[in-house]
Length: 232
Ligand SMILES: Nc1ncnc2c1ncn2[C@@H]1O[C@H](COP(=O)(O)OP(=O)(O)OP(=O)(O)O)[C@@H](O)[C@H]1O
Ligand SMILES: [Mg+2]
Image (tube, rainbow, N blue to C red; front, top):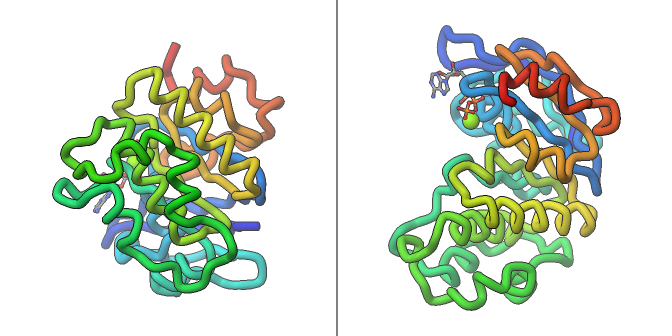
């Protein structure tokens, strides 16, 4: 499993995460909820070993392997992939070019272009389209497909439903469920409470860089979560 233990991180003098602990299990969806600016992206970036933020204490482990301190490409090779907030699809590259850009260092026996196309038939139809010709939903599917090409065991998805039409949000929930059923562990960062709850096995809420609620889906009543998130 993917284990975050008492992680502290920030940017320069600014401390953002104050001791985050959470676990992502294979074949499960762990929804991480929280309002704007609470530290969600900071956490997933710290988990991926990206240059900013700076981890000051604590660690992330993948089974017996300590990931904290490793370079992002080694964390990716160990089996963790990030679907970044805002999707980061290239305007001038085609769908196919995005999917074949990275050659997986070691195939865990999983994802190929063919399988990604099968999982996202929409991408198959658009394989020669460039990033700037895709809808928001298609771009999000492509960002997920690109992450899968690294053949991860765990996938961190940072607000994938942001800015998507309801029908695309629903399609995305289907994708998350598919990944979970494939045995991947998913950390699903969301502000969209209802979308997250549709697929979550476990729910955590982050506020001001600390986890203020962590429980199974069954023990995370909607009324409680809406109070944390200030939504109705
Ligand atoms: N590169 C950075 N340099 C300095 N401060 C940053 C940087 N990125 C984020 N922060 C600050 O860290 C805090 C947490 O931001 P973060 O992006 O992790 O929040 P978030 O929960 O992902 O919010 P959102 O839901 O809006 O994406 C905020 O106060 C933000 O201003
Ligand atoms: Mg964010």
